[in-house]
Image (tube, rainbow, N blue to C red; front, side, top):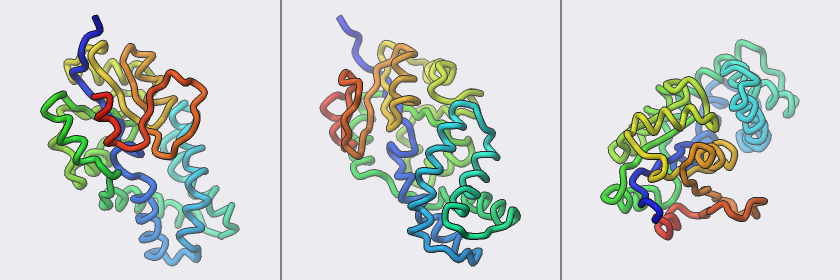
Amino acid sequence: MKAPILDVFFDLDHTLWDFEKNSAMTFEKILLKNNIPVDPVEFIRHYSPINYKYWDLFLDDKISKDEMRYGRLIDTFAALNVQVNQSAVEILADEYIQYLPDNNHLFEGTFELLEYLKPKYNLHIITNGFHDLQNYKLDNSKLTPYFKTVTNSESAGVKKPNPIIYEFALRQANANREQSIMIGDCIHADVCGAINCGMEAILFNEIPQILEDQTIRQVNHLLDLKTYL
């Protein structure tokens, strides 16, 4: 007989914390603050796919944190044909990290879901984000009290989908992998990473899309997780 789920692990960005909305608000603020002559909407339209490309490279350890932070901005301004010197890029990169967690928009249903889950399961976070930044996000968005443990890639020394971060998170949570489930927006890092570590997984697929692997369970709204948990 299959063991019951006792521990539920969540990704943070793009799963509970609305990264795209909060990021757009941050860029609108810092572009204006630094008198950068670009429309924020146009900036985000170019920045979002470039940022995903850089994050994929960062997850695969092909670039450093600084190469990601600066490169995604440099490429975005190049795509917009806007001249911005290196000093301004560094200021924007620093201010982006500084102001990003001040915004606290969450996906619809986040608190309702967590209130539903908390009496039934031990809740945890596994994130590839940076330690101080992710903790600030959790505190500022009032999510911290819901989670017993928070594992980030800096403390684990590796990033999802590396099995080491999942092993680290399971030890920190004192959880059994056969009785744990991971919920996140990234098939590669969250779903495949967890499954390869012996955990169950559900994809938070906010924008419905057909998956190549039809065995992957997915939800398009957080409250749909009540169907499984």
